[in-house]
Amino acid sequence: MKKSFLLRLVLDGVAAGLMVAGLAYYGLGNAAHEWIGTAMFVLVLVHNLFNRRWWGQVAQPPRQPRGGFDRAWTLLLLVGIAALLLTSVSISHSVFAFLQLGGGFTARQVHTLAAYWVVVLVAVHLGVRWKRVMLAVGGALQLPQAGPLRTCALRLLAAAIAAYGVKSSFVMGVGGRLAMQMRLDGWDFEASTAGFFVHWISIVGLYVFLTHYTLAWMPRSVNNRPKPLVKEPTCNT
Image (tube, rainbow, N blue to C red; front, side):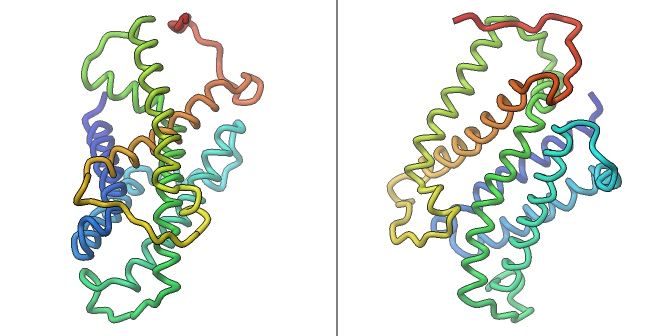
């Protein structure tokens, strides 16, 4: 695996971590939240520079339905990131305070809504590429090809994370947040900071899990997957 690709994965992982950290606004404070967001946007820009060839193919018709879904979802993610960036600049009190744009209550609402939607959009975006990510990580760590036992263990771990992600979705009120419903209750960071991040990481894992296995279980006539030359390890339960 090329070192440049490994670097891209590391930077993308840091960006994803900053995205989740940015949700802890009341635990970090405004200044830290803004600097975290600024660093995340810089890494998003770097990510797009690395993948500039992908943007050159957007106008071309996709070769298969999966490619069309990926393209549409990525463009939707772009809209979410743009909304998050524009509103963050307008309501800034630290990093971009010198601009004095004076964004009001509506801008704050849109910023909050965009933040939660971007988390979901990024998780699905990652789920589409999860197999590639796992292969890259395995190559970087020089792991041997996965056998049936390790495959089963990884799938059970993924299912456990997804199951906890379902619970966390209710605990964190994800459905209401995505529907822009006002919440009077907030997370008690003095009681448990780690719990906040565990819940949100498991929520991201849930959407990665759903996306990855939904695409993997599609009929071959739909996602046009070539027949594997080597039989994949199975998990018998």
